[in-house]
Amino acid sequence: MKIPPVKGTRDFYPPEMAVRNWIIDGWKKVSVRNGFEEYDGPIFELLKMFQIKSGDEIVEQLFSLRDRGGRDLALRPEITPTLARMVNQRINALSKPIKWFSVPRLFRAERPQKGRLREFFQWNIDIIGEDSPLADAEVIFTTVDYLREIGLTSKDIKVKISSRQLLADYLISLGIPEDKLESIYVILDKKNKLPPDTFEKILAEQIPDTSTVRKILDFMSVDSIPQLKDFVEEGSSAFLNIKCVLDNLDMMGVGDFCLYDPGIVRGLAYYTGIVFEVHDVAGELRAICGGGRYDNLLRDFGGPPVSATGMGMGDCVLEILLKERGLLEKQLPKTKIDYFVSCVDENYKDVTVEVTMKLRSAGFSANFSYKITKLSKQLKQASEQNAAKCIIIGDEFKNNKLAVKDMATGQQELVDYDEFLSDIKS
RNA sequence: GUGAGAGUAGCUCAGAUGGUUAGAGCACUGGAUUGUGGAUCCAGGGGUCGGGGGUUCGAGUCCCCUCUUUCACCCCA
Image 1 (spheres, rainbow, N blue to C red):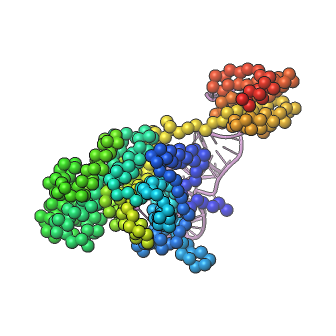
Image 2 (cartoon, helix red, strand yellow):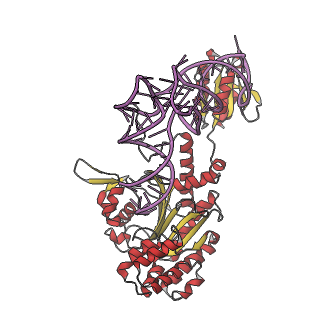
Image 3 (cartoon, chains in turn red, brown):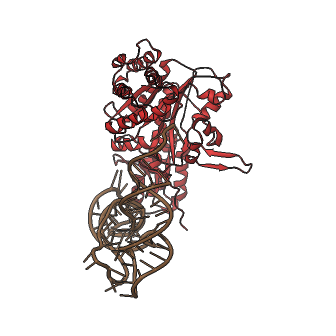
């Protein structure tokens, strides 16, 4: 009976595993050099933990199960609730600001499509306990630092940055009641995804007053900070905040990746200030990553009111983009071994194993041939395994010598066995 | 959850109008080459034609159901 793989999952054969490791290693390396520490939590949590933030409708998008004690559990669809839980548990013991990162394996029971699967990896970085726009800027900088590291330029990708606080201030100044803001955010978030006239029509359905609609449309077409002066007060905290974030990003040297885009609002209610997404410039793919400030989340999870800002980046869209740009093939480290030990004489089979073991205990990676076959076949095997050197054990061993062949140059030399052993130890 | 396309070897795909034993390239294994790798040539293994049902003398081909997959919508934490 053949068992198929589960819908929306991936099998990582060695070539795919190499890609996954390379991506994740890059995430970790950049996190660490930007001063973040790694954490992780359990892969499943109480179902209700995910309902706090996102409500009951989220249950349909989760893989959930009931354990034998009748507890409702769910495979984690994100790690931020776990982070909030962990930080809350030790909030008094942790020195602030907390700069943590994680690369969790996540699960979402959605229908798979381009750039979206049911099981994936997501890089998360968060700074907790810091109000300063410098923290928002640093989250964005770290994100760009990684993307730049793997070869993407400001011609490939852009960070689109906006502010929920700024948007809320403006909408309220137009007389829109606070309890209507959420429903308008949902529409405004679609600005970059819909044709202009459709967007305008949907907005007009929510807001009866045409002059208000006009004003919102004007606000939504602003594409630089100075233009904002026509809409909000220059001294307002929201204005100063986003200006400061963008100025800091300039100062950090990634200004050419970043731009103000009021079309970034983002899905759920959780964000309170700066929000951002990274998109491919061509606009062919869904967002590469997204993030923002969420100052109420720890309090919502039963902790004290502690501010936070963070980012999440999935591996699926990123990998598609890297493949399209040919950036993977160029940079993937080739798997290789130091030595392949070949043998063409039945009498020296044991020597072959012995040599291999000595190489390994000296710290080299080494394989040997299980069968005494034609040398050409063993050399082919060595070459397929990307061996730097191939050792040949045969007649010459009668004189206590090995042939050592450099696979790149093809050059070969006879080496005294004892000398070889003392060489590899040094 | 809604809609559309696709499913033949490990991969990419041929296989008019239904008709003998389902093919090719690449990949894999072996040989040419009894101690010298990447090339070339030759040979070989590998298929429940996604699965089930139906129409027919006869189905990879036509019909229905189902599964998987791709893409879009919903959603996007």
